[in-house]
Structure formats: C-alpha cells, structure tokens
Image 1 (spheres, helix red, strand yellow):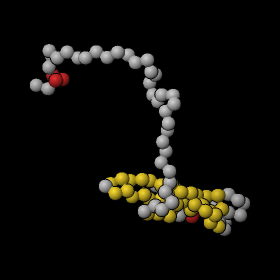
Image 2 (cartoon, rainbow, N blue to C red):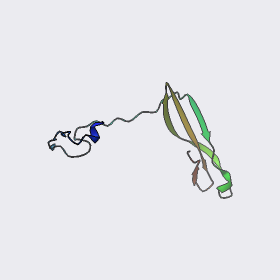
Image 3 (cartoon, rainbow, N blue to C red):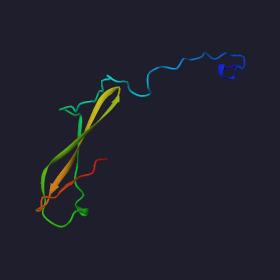
Image 4 (cartoon, helix red, strand yellow):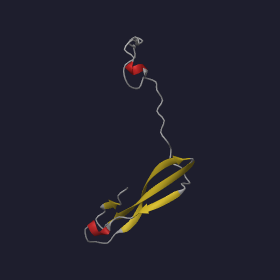
Length: 96
C-alpha cells in the first residue's frame, strides 16, 4: 500500500517560516550572456510584402540567442534584418 493511501500514517507537522514568499533580499540573479561564436546563425529577413512602397537600405541586425542543451551545447543565433526607408522609419524582421 502506498503511503498516500495509508490511513494510519501520521503526517509530519511543519513550522511556519519567518521568510516571505519568493526570492529573498540579497539573492544574486544570473543571466546567460551571449556567445561571440554561436554554433549556428539564421538570418531572418524582413517580409517586404508588408512594407510600404519605397526604397530601403539595410542598417544592421538585432540578435537573440537560444541555448539548447542536448548532450552537447548548440547555440542558435537569430539575426533579424533591419531596413530603413527614406523617412528614417525602421522595419525589423520577426523573430521565430
């Protein structure tokens, strides 16, 4: 018979903690940093079908990295193309 079904089992009592719920003061957050050498890089182009008519020039990329760990580390970097029209409006490709 599993313990959860045993009607004669006595449950241990817990004392209420003085700490508040959630992260405690003084806790150090840890954020992963981007790697300079991703294993893969996928360029995401702006879908020009949805842009207003005009001439555009590429001015750079936004970068986001996804770290997948599966026995070995594989880092995929997504680079979203940024286009700018004559009026200075910028359009960025959508990240997956």
